[in-house]
Image 1 (spheres, one colour):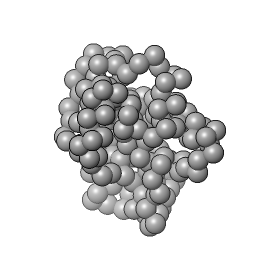
Image 2 (tube, helix red, strand yellow):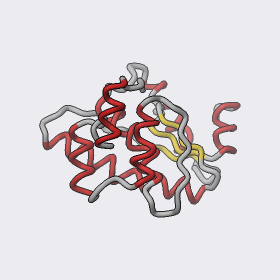
Image 3 (cartoon, rainbow, N blue to C red):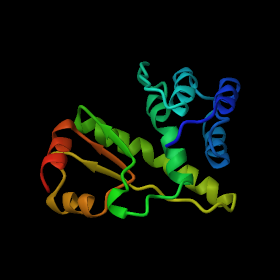
Amino acid sequence: MAPVDSETSRDTAADPLAGFSAATRAWFTTTFAAPTAPQRAAWPAIASGDHTLVLAPTGTGKTLAAFLWAIDRLVTDEPPPDPTRRTRVLYISPLRALAVDVDKNLRAPLGGIVAAAERRGESVHRPAVGVRTGDTGTDERRRLVRHPPDILITTPESLHLLLTSRA
């Protein structure tokens, strides 16, 4: 995901949604009244390619602050031609329960943005999300290796297994 130019960065300071695609802006503005403070602060930094740490209380939109830029690009950009190199977002969760929550919380924006794009007549990619934890069954683990998702949510232990074995 390429950094944006300085003009786009200036635009996002005035309008935090300016750097997103029309479909993402349409979905967001019909779903929420306005971006939260963590979202307004995070999106320009993420868009410019900066390392970004979002610290905010529960319920302030941190998941969307962290993921919306990537979701926007996953929907609007073509997936890599090699399907075995498809994973472009890796979320490492310290807890299995949090991994499941993040997966659940990504479904609405993913579906909403794709639907908004389709209503606009735009051809888009439907990003796949996969969760790999210690509870993931053997068949699902094999499927994740054969057909990697665009977004992989995992725990440190499961990531270690993914990187060091063929499990």
